Image (tube, rainbow, N blue to C red; front, side, top):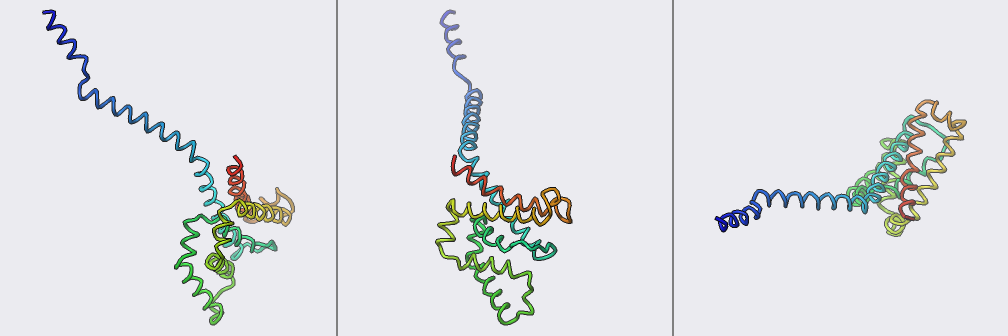
Length: 204
């Protein structure tokens, strides 16, 4: 009888297959949580930089389109072209710098030279941007773009456009009360988000 009880106790000490599977699943969950936390700590700043890069680039494109259509200003908005050049996400930059961009540039140049009537004025800035993306030397396209120098250039352009916009509006408060003032002002402020964040991350 005693031996039988000892045998039953030893048998119940071993986990069942279901218990082992549940234990393994719990360990996998814990490992996954640790992996996610570590990845967030390491890659969170980099993700923020990439996200703000997209936001600022599209804000610059929005302001460029707005300036060519219904937002006429005396500001030097042509500075948005180099801003987009230095802040454009690498995926879009490499795509526009490739064969697609070359074809667009070729068509734009042909239209501008031989068929100027079919090349409207509002296409000059976008055409200049595509041309700059395609023909820029690697020193500008890679070395400066992937360096803090390009970020500083974006910051200088953003600060200049913001102070010019505020001065032309008659003050910071008035810049929000004019026609399309909120969207214009917020668009210019968003130009500062990416370079400031990138510089902070670079110096951390």
